[in-house]
Length: 315
Image 1 (cartoon, rainbow, N blue to C red):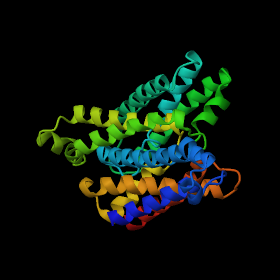
Image 2: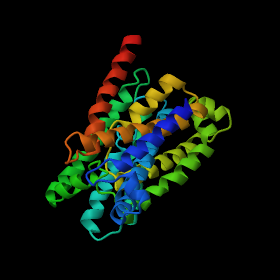
Image 3: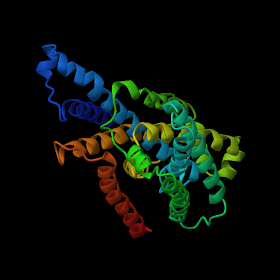
């Protein structure tokens, strides 16, 4: 099954490279047509690489969050992490308007990390009998932070700039400014190295402590990695809803909960899912292009509702 997923990923990457407003053909590339090679190097290849890394990163972050918090319906977008990063970016735009993308990424990471730690503390006060309480509380927590960001945005007339910049869209990815997305690769590697500890954390705090894992330290490290990976994607691409919820749930539904099997499938399927949504965003109203966040929001929202209904049906 993994080979099928990789084969589909290769096919979708080829479609992503050759489909778009500017015409590009294999024969033109073989013939060495300068304009087509320029289009490939400047936009199509950077865009495809960014989609693959962003889709994999957000899906893996969602899976890790679900294991750490022991809840299938949480992700970076449903617990206030992205709203916290957005608030940090607003402050950077307000007080450091000429800051570099690295500075904005660092501030977004700090604020998203603070946000997820605050939510982790909040979850300890919530009842454990209903799995939907945690994501619903996370959405309310995120809405409060988002409301604060909107308030200051309206006060200083930054809402339009912030909204356009953080809307999930790969159309603006260019060769010169997409390299930050490569920070997700070391995050992937470290998460893989911590796989056994994350699996122990998913068993519960008491059992993990009895098995010799420093629960608080490991939670801080893992959530820091999730915050870093998600912040990089937010800075480079914008906000992409539901991806970190629906992909891990679909993968674990078909392939089981064991991280040794599900982590790689989650990364591959997340990249495939986002590639499909991006291709739809390009062709639905061609020659114009929809933001990929709109397509992911519609498809992901339908899948998310189906998952909730399915859970209630079999509860």
